[in-house]
Length: 71
Image (tube, rainbow, N blue to C red):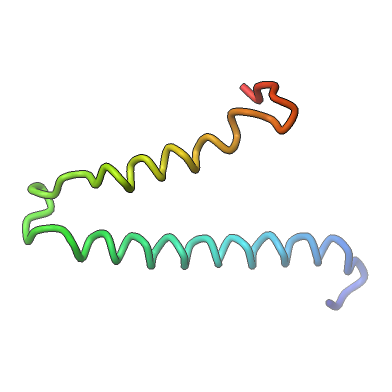
């Protein structure tokens, strides 16, 4: 860290690092998925297992640890 405000820089640095990691992980996942598609992407069918995983991941924000709703 450098500069006069190292604590805020630490926050921003961690956010950006985590975001870059998220994008890289998604790109690896998307590449592997697309490689399974037929030559014409319009003929590709959604993978039910991947759809279920996407919904499972989306649900992290629907219910709080105490059982209440975030929505």
